[in-house]
Image (cartoon, rainbow, N blue to C red; front, top):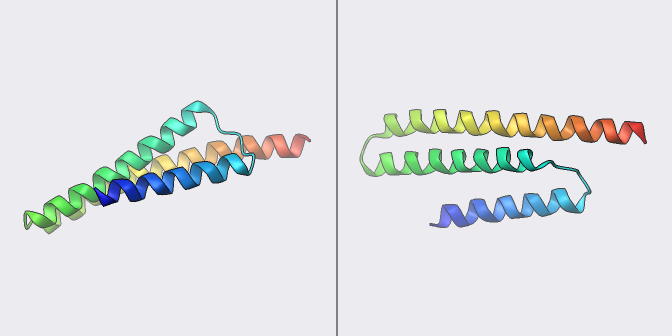
Length: 92
């Protein structure tokens, strides 16, 4: 429960920071970022659940998989946003 609240606060603060700085973000980039957060949330809950079941190796592998997916989605989203905003700022 607290993990979802914490990730929601982080996502909200990050979104407000992006909006306040005037960075243009397309709708599909918001979706990619949300999917990355969901993947990160799934990985952490999988790890914690596996620890409760006394299966730390399986939990760690699940965290690696879900965390890797989250990292990949975050990287793609950041590159898309950065490249578009770089083109706009250099054209002005």
